[in-house]
Length: 298
View: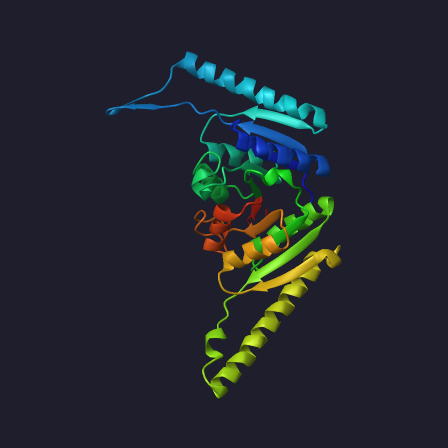
């Protein structure tokens, strides 16, 4: 997979600037084109049973201020050598991002987050939930401080699904330019664990099945790892975790000093339908490093 077009929606906040900095570094490494997109907010005021929107002069002033802020942000990127495009588009933010990504064949969308109370505090608030649901381009969420370290230690939450394999492919592309280590993590339910202490006969049989399950999953995980990371298998490791899935993934990330976590999503019903369910949602809430979310086929 080659990353040729990177889109960064910006609201000119410090957190958006973190995402811009991260995206600029990615664009330089990939020699990719960078798109800086702003959707101005035209406020609507509610007065009793009526609503009031600013007149043409006020809207023009908002657009002019947005253009000045966008030009200023673009100016800071000018000396990096990255090929940059800027755009201001009015409309519903997540729809603007979706449409722009389609029109320009964007390979990666990078957004910032406040990183304190999870999804509700993502840039544009709940808009990012809608972006994850409707934009099938891989989305990289950068928390505060997440832009400071390059993605040289990547953890992939892997459940053998199509979107998870897509996440691994994007991780491979990132690894191709940054190097470092790759960690494929599968979380599974230890269905036989509770039976291992149920007496000699039951316990022994349960332990055998428990070990067979673990070995089978390990074999599957290693086979997929060798296939996906065939160009650099020596830097790819596999990890099986049981118990709390999100906690296990975050613990592996801490153990290997991860600087990026990747996961897959179906995108059919928002965050709640992430393939690893509440796991990915918790990663959005609790991860201190950037999180990449992918859909199948994009």
